[in-house]
Image (cartoon, rainbow over all chains, first blue to last red; front, side, top):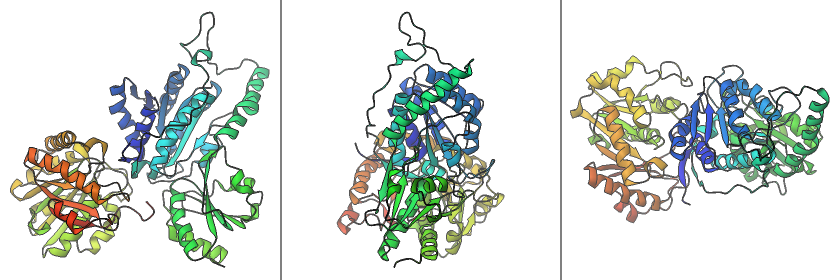
Length: 353
Length: 228
């Protein structure tokens, strides 16, 4: 299929519809407004339903209902809006509701700025909701990858019966890029809707979706099932990352999303000066890739994010060498330049040796 | 010649057509060729990123009077300053207006309607045929009509800004030329300019240039960062 130019937010909504999403509930917030705008225009044309809810809290709970009924459903928001949705995301975890949540991060904390940021890494990967849980978090690095990851997210959500978050910085949503829309997601074995979804109960059985456990022993049993069965399966099957110029690398950046693109330019520039440096780009932030950090040739890991270093502990844990992890980032909606990373590396590591 | 266009140039187009990149490059060209004072207004009330106010300093360095939001480049407020009226009244200015996309973006013109003198106004429509909503003759015409309905102005010139960002080729511009010529024939609106980023479209030849309508505006990226 020929490439088309799309803005990230539009492309995300388009990809969701192509993935079979027919329900979207959300509440406007910059910089993701083109997502609901696109759905509001396009969903009715394919027999779907768009609801502008009265709040983010209402939206995520409508998602709970649609997802419990076996529908492919999405909501999206930006940082403070995602904060509001957290309770509902936890409910979706407990109810094992397949759904996709797009988080288009802006500068925080609080109302913050409308400029791009990655300062909700911890909110996404450590859970802003209550209880013992994880949700898969996919972090696209381009508009094309946003399209592909949205499609994957619907498959992952339904396969493991879990909310899935697509975590983007605002630039991914606002950037205009050529995309191909016909990439097929990986096929996964899906639980049949008749085994769990409301409205699909086979004769003589009633499917239920439950959030309240009256008994603690049962709640514990369910939690253990998640941690012994569901999460290990996701960790095994769904972890993704990209390695860029890592073959002979002695130093490595670790970065995701838009920052990783900026850093790729820094890597190329530093390579041109003779420095053996590469980039590990986690594409899933949970599960966090462990394997690329087994690389013993790497003397220093340089984490780059648009935040104050939220991924640093994950890199420290993965490489097992706390003292060898450096960090440079910008925050509050500021975007670093390739030159800033080049200067940082030269200052900290002395450049080419 | 950009100097031959009407005194007030309103740059409109479908959402994401590349209006701002074109408008800033057009301004740069006009600043080089014209002896008049030039004002540039960012009247984009639709986009939140990639607005011409982000390159305010570069526009001002061209010797152009920059008019944009009075509440800072980063605010999510569709604020347009009273200063925007000045170049309508002060006819010693050449005036370039960078609108937001779609019919929604042109609504802002309503405020200025009584100051817009049709005899001295060009209303350009920037088209990128690789945008899904303007990828056929029919869709381009329908998009043109909705811009005209919302603004109350007639499009006076089409701009072929076919692009796939850094993947644009000369063949892409030729494909758009064919489509826009048909639009032009059906609507009697000329293709005034064909614009592309010179460092990207490396396979452009003099032979191909001859097949492209209107004046060619070679562009450089103002809005797209090197890593984008």
